[in-house]
Length: 330
View 1 (spheres, rainbow, N blue to C red):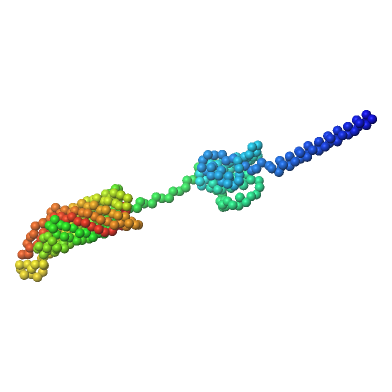
View 2: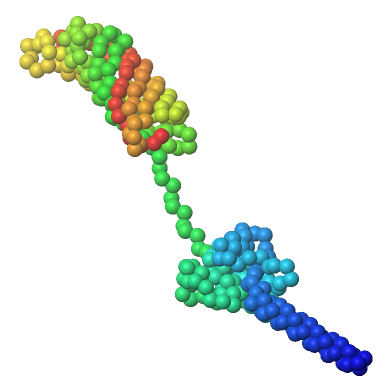
């Protein structure tokens, strides 16, 4: 009886040990299957702190290449260089090494992704195409060739030209009307150029009206002004120096009973001070206003007689205003 009970207990223990062994074998098999089903994901560690390395790191992050997980090996990539010449040194988790020199950050990121990934994804086909002909890697002791710099273009010449209508009052009380053409170019801070003016006495007042003398004048002056920009307005005070011409004509018949009028021409130096205000409109066009004062130091101002006809003299100077349009800079 005792032997029968002993055999039954031994048989039960043996059966229990077999069931336990089968259980642990099943657990080990499931654990191995899970480990094989979930390997370490492809990961990469980008080494470098400059702008090119940061751009490659950002592109790989967008393409779902994460940083290495705990307990997993990762490929190491050292990126250096600059835009147009990027050096990539790669060592994968198995110790294999490769070096590539590419011409863009995008190509560098694509090269790293194609080397690290073991699966085929659509991300490789979403990037821009690689260079049609990868540049050959230059020798280590040869620096990359510098890109040719374009030849500097000659500086443009800044200047301004204007046309104005003017009215002035002479020192003898006469009223004059005329037109002026000006132009200048910038030489440093000074705009240097010239003034061409034609004018005539209206004979509404002064010596021209009293003696019925018709007076015409012209001036050619060299000018220099200093433009000062104030928002949309430019002020340009300046001075001018040159020569002037006058023709004085009388319609009274001479004492010799000639029918032809008497004409007298004269020339003398002229000086002038002026202030121009330019209101900028559009595309280099401006509305100009000018205030000027002219002086003729050697003028013959007194009336005189020629062939029995009295003629008015030449004004000593004038002050006037002008209004017109100008184009250019400043």
